[in-house]
Image 1: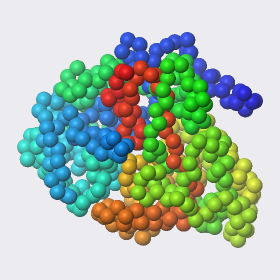
Image 2: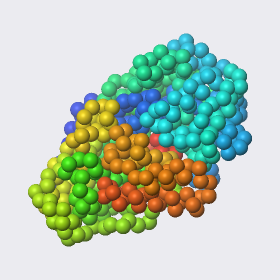
Image 3: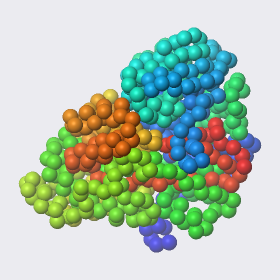
Length: 514
């Protein structure tokens, strides 16, 4: 190892020790306890207001849904009926009928899962932070206690992938949720009905699930699952090597190293990357209001150097937000690394001695990427202050509902994940998301028009043109520097058969023993 690698790995080992993880313990899957690495701690389990990550996995494990995501033999995502339904069928482009199986009971003495719960759960999504997952939903009509019809205003090609079969299709207990303040919940389910129940949460340490003895569907393979909070993927890899967890999501450079020499008894699982990573800029901040300044920054950043330094050269360069393999994915951008052009734009804008704050999750590869950006911007006369943050403070930065941090937000490193439909990747940048997840805080009439038309369009070729144009509009704001579509690789014990959703989140209730 060179000096930098030695210092980095020493810091990671110190971080593991600080979390109370001991390499001599082999606790990954003893006595029926499955331990998995969790990158970000939970904040909101409510499917209408969640952030994602482990929250997605917990919703799948502990709440009902009408359908679940599945891949066909060609690796194309689709869906199938869940354990909770007798049948579910797309009767026509705007009507989906379903019939629940009787006997699925909520915990906390909240009674049976019924059509009332389905109607309440889906319709409350229309007023939630994830409303765009249900862009054309009108209502749910109740036929009887177990049967109903989902009614759409207009056809939408991704109703199942983005809504019904996703975490946004999670069903919550109506009676228990209505009693809560604002009818919302955070880190405690008001009631559960899944293969598992969440029984313990220790902030910044672990989440514990126990198999639900009352569950009427397919029983899970492990009596207990523990999500161990390790907010650094290098640390997660070391925890895996030490036997602390049975599965961990690892960085691209770690995957490349493992491919040459695998840890004993291990397997690599490569998932189609649903992620899109970019550097964002707040168009309303006084230092970044001038589009020439934003475009200068776009051209000052060498993305290839970021990929080499932060990803070990093992990730593709992105040209937008729509992931690889999804219609609307762009093959090129309208700008490229050009520091001379960046200096000219700054001169034209009359900007000198510019100093900016760059905020990122405190993960080693992101900080490495930020250091490359810092060097790039210094080269054109911009001073960049790198501010690493834990997951809680970071994910609140652009949310107006969480305070005034958004007013001071300037630049940041961001990664979202998407279901295999372009509308999912683009939903966060519409005008209604300003102050929520559109942290760049811009809007555009053409973009809004294309968003609405794209939802109802069923011709895939026409949809592709629409979604590519929308990304071009985003790029033209100067507020985005496209980075990559992060590859997703898990390392796991050869004795474990994992399963994942379309966003590559772990579905622990569907894990099996080899």
